[in-house]
Image 1 (tube, rainbow, N blue to C red):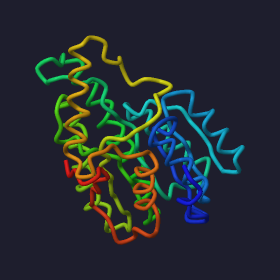
Image 2: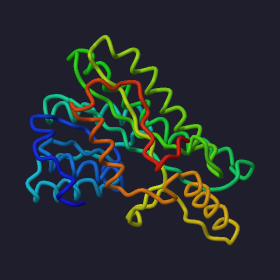
Image 3: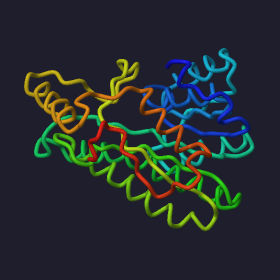
Image 4: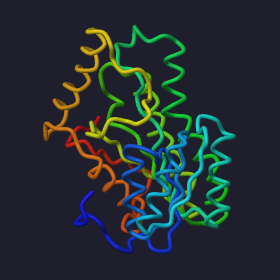
Length: 265
C-alpha cells in the first residue's frame, strides 16, 4: 500500500469493526483505516488477527482484536459485543469474511461442500448484520459495508455465487429497513484480485490436473469478463470499501458497487 493513496484524518474519531481482518482484503482495509485515523476492531477466526492488531499498534494505529466464529450467531454476538465494549460504539461495520473454498462444476460438489460454502460466505454477513442492527438503530447512526462478489455469475462456483447473491439481497433489503434510523447499508462486489498466498488456507488447493483445469477456467472467465482484462489489487478493493465506509459516501445506500474492471457480474 502506497502513501499516495492514504487520506490522513478521514476516519478520525470513528470506530470501525472489520471482519475477516487477518488476511487479504480485510487486512488491507484495516491497515488503511488505521492509517487514516480510525480506531479499528479486527475480527477473525484465526489467532493471526492478534498479530495483525499488534503490528497496527506498533505503526501508531489504534487497534483491537478478537477471535470469533462468525458462521454462528453466538460468535457474531460476541464479536459485536466486544467491539462495543472496547471502543464504546460501532460507527461502521465492514463485513469481509467469505471466499470460495472449492472450484469445480456444480455436479461435482458434495452436499456437505455446498453447505460449507454457504456457511462461509453468507452466514457471517447475515449474523453480524443481525447482531449490530439493534446498536445502530438505538444510535440512529452508522454504516454497514458488506463485501459481496461479481462471482454471482461465474463458472465452477455455484454455491459461492448463491451465497454472494444472498449478500446482495441482505444489502438491498436491510438498507430499506434501516434508512429511517439514519443507517446506511452498502456493498462492494470485488472481481478477481491478486493477493499474497494466504497464511491460513480457506480449503484444499487444486491437486489433480482436472482440479487445476477447473480453477484455471475461473481465472480465464474472470479476466475475459473484465473490460480491463486483468485482476485487481488489494489496494484497489480497499479503496472502494473505505470510500463507502466514509462520510464521503453519505448519500449512498442500498447499492452494490462492482470493483471488477468493468465486469458487472
